[in-house]
Length: 250
Image 1 (cartoon, helix red, strand yellow):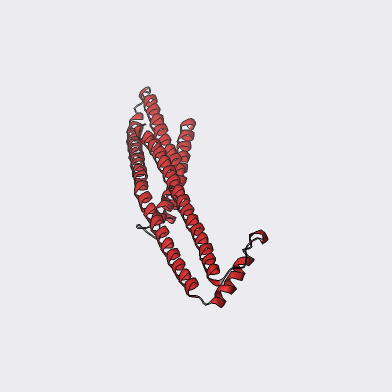
Image 2 (image 1 turned 60 degrees about the vertical axis):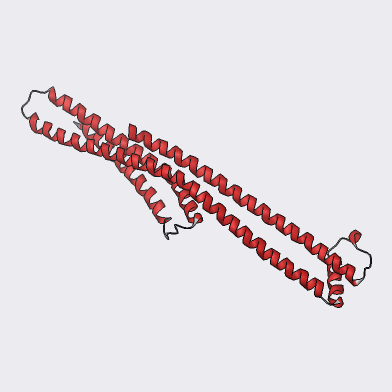
């Protein structure tokens, strides 16, 4: 009798730990949902990363709940077998109570399996959602790069116009500043004003090309980071979905 009470106490402890882990998982995810920004890929990726990074809590919690339900059914089956071996008439109420407890344990097992199936389906949907987020993120990166490129092109055109229409005194002053940025071995021989103007335009265009190259590198890096993060979330979501489905099938 004492052993049975201890066993049921252990089952309650296991079940409580499982519920706590599930509660912590829900709390962590819920705190990162708000404010809702459904149209923002950054919000979607943040939520997805938060879910897969904390999904281990939910998986372990579900394992504990499933294990506690299985242990409880085993103990109730053993208790029923022991009661059937006794011939005392006082065992009838205990049999009735045992049957009621077994029905409750079976319901708990069914709820855990259903919850595990919901978790598996949700994680599969989360992995599919990554494709949508990747497209949205790629479009956002492209739109931002186009905007920056257009701003850079407009600035280049404005500066070119200023250089072409600047007075000779301004060109001479800018030429001195340009020469000061060069190494002593790169100094250019004395030129007339028009030659200086052309050299300034050529130097400015070279800097503009470097700026465009830097923008292209930033776009490539951002796209790579987006793709790697999407693939990581997809793999983790599918792996956890497989784990939840395994709990459902137990």
